[in-house]
Each structure stands twice: as C-alpha cells, then as structure tokens.
Length: 73
Image 1 (cartoon, one colour):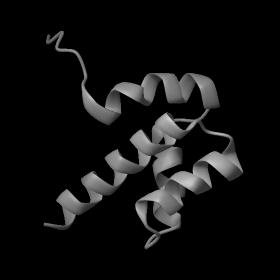
Image 2: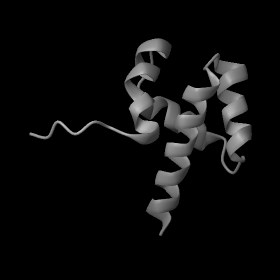
Image 3: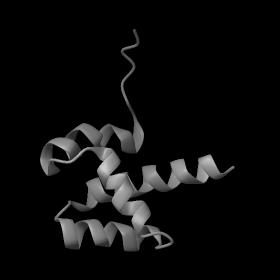
Image 4: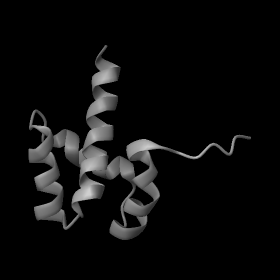
C-alpha cells in the first residue's frame, strides 16, 4: 500500500467532490460535452454556470484535457 501524496491538479479532487457534491467523473463528462472549447472557455463555464471556484475549475479542466490528450496518442 502506497502512502504517496497526490500532486498536481488531482490533489484538488477530494475538495471538489466535497464542495460541489458530484463525483469527478460527472465534472469530466460535463467538460468533455463542451469540446472543442478552449481551456479558459471551459474554466469560465464551470465558474459561471456551476459556481465552481476558479482554482478548482482550472485544475479539473487541466487534468481532463491532459488525460484526453494523452489517451489520443
């Protein structure tokens, strides 16, 4: 069992789930639904339409875009 601390955007995920009451997979599906929007357009969507703080929205979008880009390789 590893006790390595999660770093980067994913370190925000427990807080996002607790504060906004939805699992990360739901938020990622919402982000993907608005592709091919740009990073900041997606952040703005989460902040303005869903009340998410900028830091949380930015972390979620960055993680989702990076993961999808990696999966496409």
